[in-house]
Amino acid sequence: MNKEHPIKAVDWGDQDDDSFKALSKAEMDTLRQTKPKSFSSINGWRIIASQVVLTLIIAGFCYFFSESSERVVYTYSALVGGLIGFLPSALFLVRLEAAKKNVKSSPGGYLAAVVSGEFLKILATILLFIGFALKQPDLKWIPLLVTYLATLKCYLLVWFWK
Image 1: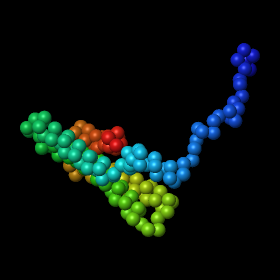
Image 2 (image 1 turned 45 degrees about the vertical axis):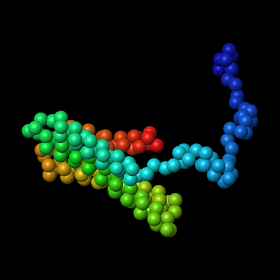
Image 3 (image 1 turned 120 degrees about the vertical axis):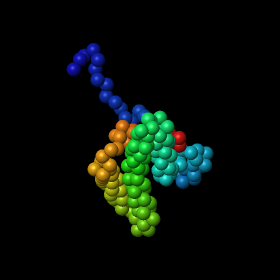
Image 4 (image 1 turned 180 degrees about the vertical axis):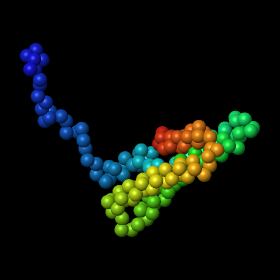
């Protein structure tokens, strides 16, 4: 231990009690009314819709900016990439909405729905990639992967627009 810079013990009793305050129901309701945007949740279908729109925009770019001989293949590849991006997300969202409608659902049941929905999403994504790679060998991977990755970034875009 260095004598020039002794370690000072922290006294946790010195902190203000105002650093954390539990709010009553009335105070929470007032806070919700004054700042409603802070308490709004993101609509999952809005994310899916933004993924579909972004897929169509990228497919349009591929159609208009590719050579005429490969225009259809590039556009189709972009559409497939978008499909691989938004179809598993839609399956996940349907799974969550089914769990919300279950009257007997508990927090543990909802957590199980989230985990199983995420498993379905990953499985569907892998199967779609493998299926399209085997059944459509003429796909162009650059537009497919660009569109797929762009659909994944829609989650961030919708969150920032919130």
